[in-house]
Image (cartoon, rainbow, N blue to C red; front, side):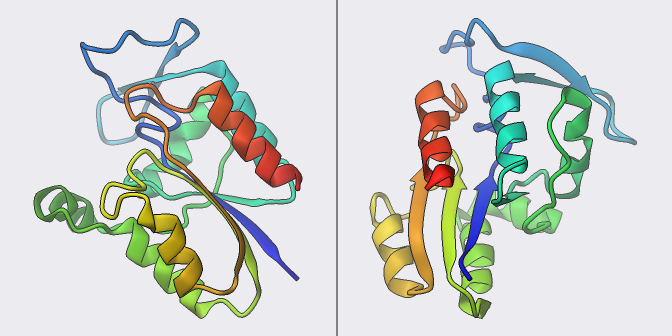
Length: 177
């Protein structure tokens, strides 16, 4: 049996990163999330993105967060997002040193998972930093390294904009096949 796995990042995908050089989408809604013991955190998310993630979570796909938010993703339900499992909960040092060393932590976690699979996998990975390390070679490399991947969709939204309607439709199309 083939498993369909959808991995989603939070910052830059579900919630755009802020920049004074980019005008936020007109339909973004500001939300506050309380993640104890921290002070409330402001996130902006388009309702279309929340609807899409809800729809994907209700599909036959296994939808999981792959984000530096790690265990903090359990508070995303405060903005109307479904509770999804975390694919990998990074150690804070991994995330901290990733920014300093430019060594990724998400890709090795996914590679370890794929190497251990005994069933085939249809994989959709949505992350604003997918091609940061290897340019367009990521897709070709992953398919070559993991023959168990029967279908692969890589979506890299602009991190300052987040998921666009066009990118949402790409994921919808992938999941409907």
